[in-house]
Length: 100
Length: 237
Image (tube, rainbow over all chains, first blue to last red; front, side):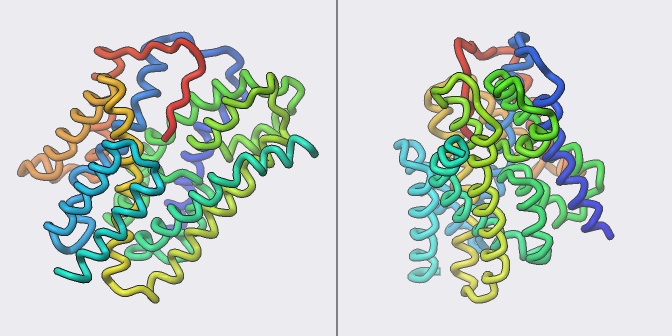
């Protein structure tokens, strides 16, 4: 029961923010504060979701830290997203196979 | 029909990317929920960060209200995209059609639609744009969640890194370009660590551990580093 209700809730809060403005808001938001707030949300959310959780993605702390560093370094050099993901995963798998 | 085909063509790279990312999501999700539930969540949510946070809260058996507020907050940015997109849509599109394709607004598809040269976008274009990404996102989750048992623990563990690596790949390049984004990220990480490690404080609800750092960091950004919006901004997340 918990699961069913949660699925419905998540569907609603994913649908409503997308569709309501599309139907009802006819003018551009001019307010700089609101626009900035909405602009920064994804960065804050993703940073918060990723750290410190990324250090525990595997059962080995060192492996997790290495994986985080690989992803970070690749991103720093503006690698394409799929390359960052692919290389990080492969490196972690390789290291885990060889050393952990 | 031409617009529909154009939408589909434009969405192919996104559809493939979604297939891969949602595969990793599926593998991750089945450590706490069933493959069916993971697939339904992907089909109905169509967003990486929102449903990733939601599923993590489900793992911790968080309350309904916590999950609702957290996921809503994360998805709030879509409102900004919807508003901006509504200016670019053909004015004759009826509301009921908007209610269907509005569901398909994601960071990547918004970025494609808003950069379209044509002055007004038709509903056929919007439908074409969203079909493959929805299929890719749902199918990837299904495949990832049902096949995770076939993989060794090592592979599953390595795949757990995939979503985090994607998030890093999204935020780091923009942090390099914008001091505001950089500060927002640092504040968010600092608070997130406080709620994870500091005794007593770390006992608060799992939803608040996401909500408080997010709102605080975003407020800091909006107050001290208000963004200059010269033209249509695409925040590509």
